[in-house]
Amino acid sequence: METSIKEQAMATLPEPGVWSRSYYLLTLGLILTVAATAFEALAIATTLPATVRELGGLALYGWAFSAFMLTNLVGITLAGGEADRYGPARPFVIGVILFALGLLISGFAPAMLVVIIGRGVQGFGAGAIASVAYVAIGRGFPEAAKARMLALLSSAWVVPGLIGPALAGLIGDHLGWRWVFLLLAPLAPLAACLALPALRHLPGNPKAIRDWQRIRASVRLPLGVAMIVVAVELRSLPLVALLAAVGLVLAIPALHRLLPAGTLRAKAGLPAAIATMGLLNLGFFGADAFVPLALRNVRGQTGTAAGLALTAATVCWSTGSWIQARLAAGGGGRGRVMLGQAFIAIGAAGIALVVTTNVPVLLAVVAWGIAGLGMGLAFSTISLVVLEQALPGQEGTTSSAMQLVSGLGTALGTGLGGAVIAYFSIANTTPRTGILIQDLLMIGVLMIGIIAALGLPTDPHRVF
Image (tube, rainbow, N blue to C red):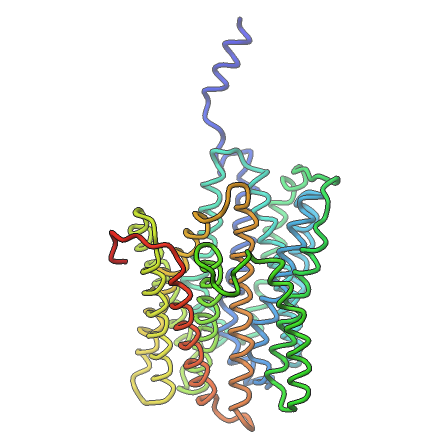
């Protein structure tokens, strides 16, 4: 009887929270590790113009972003599978080591190509860290604490998003761009030490079967995309045709393997949502990556001033997400996604105006704030639509497809943008023309995204 009463009393006690004695080290370690990767990802756009001025290599500008995103896709896929088999501790340690190593490689780089190599190493490590973080939440926290931990992990991007670009600009202006990499290098390993003891106790399943087809596809896809981006940069037509053809042969079957059927033709429903997400990221980040370059190398602004435009976009992105959350109760979302893409196009047009005329530079901050608002409206809405459209039991696969096209869109936008800017920046002259053409191309991509969004569900009772 006494045992039964004691068991009933224990059952009525609330489960420990994320900051309880049992979990606070794991919570803090995961948040700080993800925050380190977030800060680096958001800071690079601000510091890269100074890197190019010192090392040269404007032709490789876009690869600083594409290398990170392409290897990130591989890191996410491989680390997730290994965490299922052996537990999250091993891939987490490997991811943190590679991320820190990549920071050191970029920080001490003697040439732009070495910076790109460092960015690729960072991307692989960051992908592994992100993948393991979600596995750790699923296995390491009680049910009642999982939602809270997911929210905290999302918030790990908020502070870097608000202060990262401006802080990186200050560090670059006063200490040098290398210190943005070097000061971050010890943070991730120190944070990992907090989480590692708890991660070691999370089990794996050595009997789990590896999905080799999916793994091979996840490697073929970034390899094919990289070849396509390289082909665009070449001036020899036979080489362009050869590399582009090989890249397409590698990438398209991999996409068919990794994405829901009908995605490449934006079939109504889930495929249209996934396709629109890819176009949205391509259009936004294909312009976003070059906003600091426009302000620093065309309009002669400081890194701090250039970072303000990215900060404005981040703040307005959060605002847009909050607005869409208030509007989302009735379901649907087609109108919000289309409106969000229109806002991004307006922002890109504003940046194009800043680089081609003598309008006040403050217009860039306002314009890119409008773009961020549009991204908040569209990105969050599509994410919600994807979750609503996912079949029961396939939420994980569907979410992976959404992350895949997000990273792929970012890699394509930044890689192709770098190629366009390099092509039109002959003899290291101002990148004004290249940035203008890139912004116009991204506006065109967003218009295609608006058409693809016609396949999304809508709520007839809502204006948005």
